[in-house]
Image: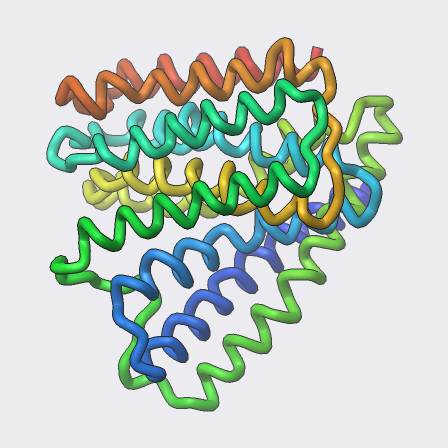
Length: 308
């Protein structure tokens, strides 16, 4: 089993660095071509930062493990709320009250309700993907229309970056992402078979935590520097894209059956975790250490439940 765990670890590392390279290369190419910064931020950066999860989900479907793809998205959304916000709050209070995330949170809740409704059909197919991507297009359009006057700072933008470096970043990202995804999925499915658990459970736990590690590491470092106040907005945006973009594209590749375990437990845990954000979004509460302990405890309890 050492090889399988090593495959997962190496795949995750490659995905992290390849995803970062792809974002940097695509952002700087788009800005060079004269695409407005806001459009770049809403599309290329948003899709690029979700590229590792997208490639993992698509690769899982291609390899005949659709449960892993669904588990990755559902597990990542749960981990984003409970772990990515909980752990940094143990280090420093997240002053989330200083940022207005109400509109984006309502978009995320709407996407969650839509996703849950589609999952209740018992099987996600191609037309569900079209519905999810149409909802994503509507959200991006609404966000663009309401924010077009804003002065946007684009993540990964380096105006003086030489053209050859842009090309190198793009090549590394485009090659590294599928290689990393293949290693991660192959290792994860082998682990699932060895321990007699479903690919869905591995997706909900090992793969979901792995693909959430970059966000967690970034937020922890920001908390150490006392600059993690934007973490809530980042989590909301990531969860929105996971549901609409990643699953929207993934089910166009192939159908994804929704196991009874998802319908009875995991989807509702994801929805409940999303609703835990209400005090921070609408009531002006900061995420204190007490909240951090509560969120982390809930996540550990959920992992135990999922693996039981």
